[in-house]
Image (cartoon, rainbow, N blue to C red):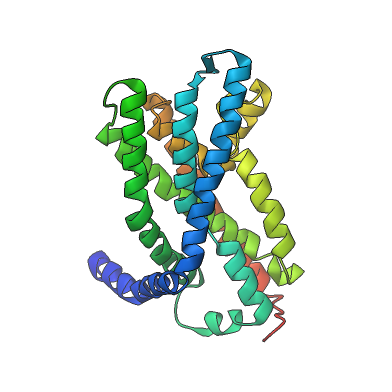
Amino acid sequence: MHPIKATKKYLNTYLPFTRAGIQAAMVYRSNFLAWFIGSIVYCLVMYYIWLAVYNSSGEGAINGFTMNDMTVFLFITALTNFLTDSDGSYDVGEEIKDGNIAMRLIKPVGFHSTFLFTEMGWKLLVFGMIFVPVVVGVEIFKYSAYGGFSFHIGIFLIYLLSMMMSYLFSFYMNVCFGFMAFFLKNLWGFNIIKSGILRFVSGAVVPIALMPDALRNVLEWLPFSSLCYTPVMIYMGKYSYGEIILRLAIQLGWVIGFYLISKLILSAALRHVSVQGG
């Protein structure tokens, strides 16, 4: 089949899942609003914690991060997490637990693609309603804090590309984790542990640049820095163009790697499938 026709057929098959994801997000908009407010409160709490750290240290900058840099980092990190975080592990785990996975597997559609396009509907809603206002607010803050306009459209587009790969990596990694439900049946507690660990090793709580050298060198090469730290550092202009190319290549490598791993795990898991509701 011609590539254009194949792409059109693919999109016609899966775009209805995206529309369903948007509709579901609108139905549960109170959850959406609560999550957003919670993220803002978290940013404010972290801001005052870091303000206390900088005031007590007496230093204008820590490992190249000023307090103004940290403020930008906190809000862009929260925004990036908001857009790249995936519920793949929860969704897959719940469907395995209640048996709905059986119905999904017998449908003539790709297992991964149905979850991916459904979640993309929610992400598009977040992007339209939250992303632009927050970025504008951050740029206004940067203008007042740094005394000049520092927005660079090229860097911003690379940030969007990096963020897209971060989401794909997050999605396939969480799907791999969700497949553990084939064997453990319930992932609720494991999901909480996973989320806590990932927030630290991805640099979402403490910038990896501020960590001890030995730990920083390890975390920068592990896949988890691709989740949040890489796109945020690109946005902030902390990477040279050579470093940007390297980080994007690392992200792409981990996306491909976890995509292939998810396929292998699904193939192995289906040979031992046992669901509690089906």
